[in-house]
Length: 83
Image 1 (cartoon, rainbow, N blue to C red):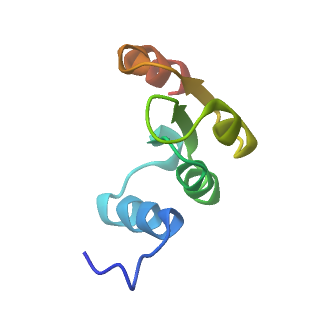
Image 2 (cartoon, one colour; image 1 turned 120 degrees about the vertical axis):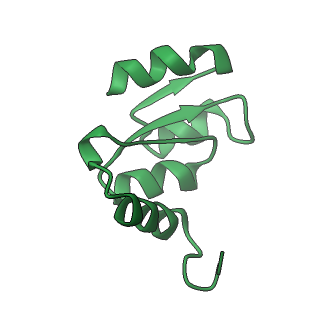
């Protein structure tokens, strides 16, 4: 809850992975902005960009999203393809 300690997506995701004990190979960062993709990459997890949020396809591709989907209905197949 204290944004002064974890002010980036990288730090937030790192904290979540540590606290949950999640396996990075079985984890996935889903997001709509480049900061989400960068946070995932910095934490060595796959990333799934979604274009139905604030970001667009160009932004997500430039941030090296592992995969990109365009609609919420594509979430199950997008996740399954990456994990």
